[in-house]
Amino acid sequence: LKDVTAELEQTKSSVVPGEKAFYLYDTMGFPVDLTELMAKEDGFTVDMLGFAVEMERQKTRSRAASRKSLFGKGKSFVLESEETAWLNKESIVVTDDSFKYEDVAVPLPANVRAIFDDENFLQCCKVKDEVGIILDKTCFYSEAGGQVGDKGLLKGKNGRFKFRVDDVQSFGGYSLHIGKVLKGELRVGDDVNCSVDVSHRSKVAPNHTMTHVMNHALREVLGGGLSQKGSLVTADRLRFDFSHPKPVSAKELKKIEGLIQKSIEECQPVYSKVLPLEEAKSIKGLRAVFGEAYPDPVRVISVGKTVEKSVECSEEVGHSIEFCGGTHLKNTNEAVAFALVEESGIAKGVRRVTALTKANALNAIKRGRALENEINQINDSDLEKLAKDVQFLRQRLDEATVSAWLKSDLRQRLEKLQKKAHVAASTSALLLASEGIEKAKEEMKAAVSEGKSFVAVEVKIGADSKMVKRVLEAVQSVSTSTPFMGLARDGKKLLCFAVCGQEANDKGLKADEWVRFVLSKCGGKGGGKPSSAQGQSSSLENFDEVLLEARNFPKVFFEG
Image (tube, helix red, strand yellow):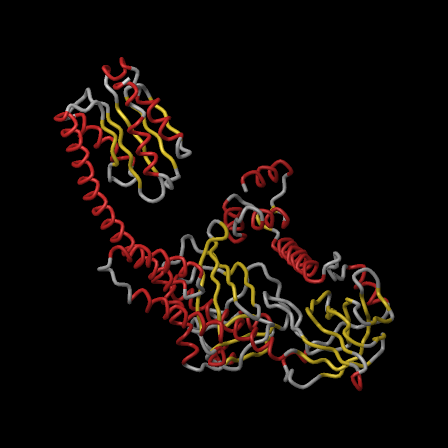
């Protein structure tokens, strides 16, 4: 930002260009409201109209990329200014989409005004063609405000034609119904019936309404200073981005989820009304996306209280109320259930939450309860089984879609159990290792007493390399002149370590050569010095043979 303002000072300009502000927002993750505030402190203003234009261009590019992925063959189905100008020149009026808020269960008769194949306008299309169709009117919702477009069918009279609508986009007021011809042939001027996929919309609507309720709940819990940075509303989930300086805690997430669930249980009515923009802006507590351009008049969605009462309220309203042109529920209880399943950071000072409604939320809640019950039933007295149970449940919990606050809580519980298992395992291993060290010491004492030339034994310390030093200290406390080799295993790997005094070295027995020879018999490697060496192998199949080789190797130096 300092680089931008320094450049402006050189050109004697006092306005931060919209594209610069958008670059800071989109590429650097710098909130535009903060750009505006900091610019103002230095005596500059921000071209917010230019910023809004860049934002809309980015959304168009993003939607085009998604459609290319959906339809393949590089098709993006974007009506650029050249195409909309042609439509206007041909006296094709913009699509009347006011029917999208009416009862979409009843097909809407419409007339085909244009057919677009992503490059040219056509007079007709046939089976398997992927095209975009413009109608004089429609009941389909075009993607906007973070909400995906409707799906459904366009049908000809007597079933002679059928077109599958996979997406709907709006360009300059023209609703482009994008999809594939399934049956027959369609021509410009033909009449069709618009049939919205009611099942698809019935899954999208609760996610949009609950996005509004969540926006309000976030402010209730985290404070009114946060602002919306983006959203996505689809049939299977809702996503909401907002400004916040730190991660949202599990306790806060639980409270937010609880407030939204309470809204559902209270069966709050959802109201909509179109108001003059200035009158709507006067509503205290009304939420709008910063930098977004809204029409005049504008549609207002209010949850729990009528829009009229909100207008009359002299204080800040205590419920969800926003500008919105999307499709919504009539009552919050239609959402059935709510589960906030993820919270993360996507940029500096910007957090993202993802949530579910209806059947998806019920499944997440059910799954969470089942995992909680399994964790409650863990027998922490069976220490050997505890570690395996914790590892198994941790993996299942990580993969599960459950409420984010519950996942955090269950993870903490598993971590405590894991620590308990680790401490118990460490204590048990230490006890066994101590016994193994003492036994190695006794072997050395017996060898010295019997006048043996060397000692090569299995030392039961597991494959804990930290214990090797203690073993060597123990045996050398008995004798520093008697060569010693220890072999230790734990089911995964084999440790081999040896010490040889100067007397043994003079006879030709060197610790490094001894270790390398023994490990060569089981695919391992080792090294060190003539006086001390160690190594390891991942093969334990022929341990008894390896131990025999460890005892045979020194004999030639003492019995030869």
